[in-house]
Length: 472
Image (cartoon, rainbow, N blue to C red; front, side, top):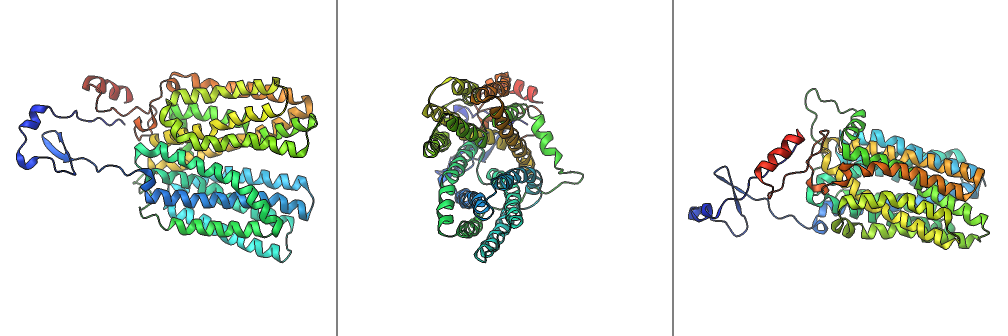
């Protein structure tokens, strides 16, 4: 669906306007078929959008609480049972659970009040982690209990993630979607950088403290959600309409731009998932005789790229054309992998990986902005659930492949395989649809197969008609 706009009236029309139809100081009139209509009031800056900032702050506390608890699970398992295998199994179970639960989570986000759904997920984690911390104080830390709490918390994460992202479109105007999704990236990467050291420090004081603080963090997140004044109920289901889970995958597949980009994202995640790349760096550092402290510094150098990327995402997206950003981000992957396979020394490896991670927040924010613009609000949750499932499920495959190849052939072949996989994944970005992308706000809110850019006010009427015909 395209939205055309009537060209402004001529100077002659304005000269003959009746005195009582003159523009008021705070509201302009726009001729439209002989009648006058009021322009929409000027948009508030995103920082003054209290509803969105309440959502963002709430999700920031939830993300920090999640990261604080997640670093403490393996520490608790290692301290109580000494089993590194079980610690790894719990981490894998969390990742798989979150990816699987994102599918029903997206469906729920399109069927019920989104704020209520996020509050429920938060309160479940408040009780779960609060009770768990009390059991740890009582020295009741059976491995099965740890597994159940970790998986239960991951299930809540899988449900709340697509819900929180779908809520953005309800709280910000279309012109600010890109800015809002870019701001979201700061929250995520700041929590990723800040949560683990906080969790580790609290665990050093008392084993229960990371989980108790996470419970309090989710409680604060819940309170902040109550400050959102705008209703967050989704559009009611019309007679005969079925909002089934599979529709999210169908809409994603029918949108050419989103379809091409999700193929690249899946392949890139498989080649450069954080866990897999860190595993490759650790194994490479150990094979070259690096100390544990030096290896830790190497991972810090690599990880800082994501945080820097989240901080510059907004300005970069504002100044650089979307097509150039996606093309550059896609082909940085295989080039970086080739460099990783051929450079000597360890510090250059960390710097190269930091450059790869730098692109993540920028392209993630831009992709989510296109998704928000192209997909109707009533389907946002299901499409986001499908996206999260497809992007997350590729990560365990990448981690397993990296470990297997390293065992069999060493680091050079690991980075070579990364180059091949990321190179194949980048091919869809060469499509004319990606090379000719308009900004996200230029796309209509539609689930049609070909999302067409909104005709702007400066487009000649004849050209605009042609565009509308093509879209239909």
